[in-house]
Length: 458
Image (cartoon, rainbow, N blue to C red; front, side):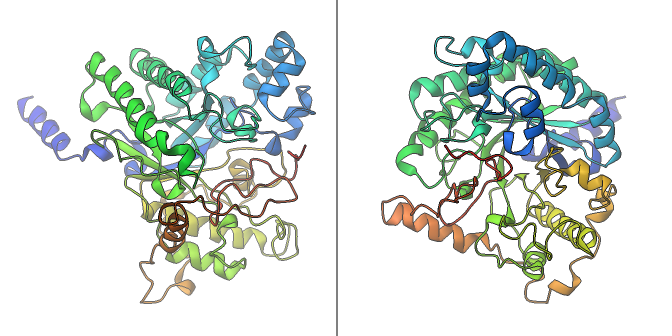
């Protein structure tokens, strides 16, 4: 008994705190999917569902609730929450070899935070969130909870914030306070309801803040991040949570363009970092199948560690996605996209702790945005532990770039020079005439929240 206890304590002492409390499957490598569109609907990728709810003319959940009225909207959203993700989905995830889900949620799930005279969001989602968490626990799926929609909206005109706000209103003290209350509340639930939240291991304090706008986001680094950290760790201290069982507190990495999240933190024990890598918007990569494979086969992301690539996909640029070379029903398409999936899987696993694909499902009829559909189409293998070692990259490597340079570095440094050295925001990218937006200068770091299947143009 004593020998066993000593062995356990020794093993624990040798476990780096930044790597503790990760998925028990696959040696702690995160291989997951986003449950996007469940608690924050993104109409571009689920227009059928959106229309069926009676929300078709509206750009966001806020707009739909405002126009339908609270009672009618609540009934529509309840049906959505009951049907979008079910136990069958978790059965399929487990069968597909996945071990993690990232669940985007909005602050309004804590309904006491909502300004009832001016904010309009569906009510009753908490019960459904907890039901999903119970299913994740039952199937041994690790959970990253992600504050995807912040008070006031962390970026303008984007439905992933839950509203289509004309300006990003989050970057103010009173909004930070609301978000910090939310983070403290959800942290307490993680520890006081282990039968529900027992598989939650990471808490992301904010998804995709504005990038390359330091005049807007300066207080994100100086105020919000350290206060959020203090709140989460304070709840854990109060509850007596030992360090190796604490939440990984996740921040968008500095390469996202919103500043260095570590700059004002008191420490970084059990911190983790998120980066969203959509090759389709990386203008440093030539748009060709050979270039996409070479990039994914030879590069490593130069982000802070431990890193999770929290969003990525198989999508390619809008102007080529339906051409003969790139369309999903072209001869050889399944084989090529399968190899590119594996190349990206290997890139993100060598870059950090692993990855979370965007998204588990959609109604687009395009498996490049739907992991579930891609598995069913034979594009994504179910043997992820094996595909992590498959040699799909032999033709794209040579001795010099066997361990590739981080191509992100020059691109990141160039954008940073525009902001920091020249003391001015990076020049805005070309605004798409379709619904996609160049949300970041020089580096487009986001998925198509405003996909052409659902125009956001006014």
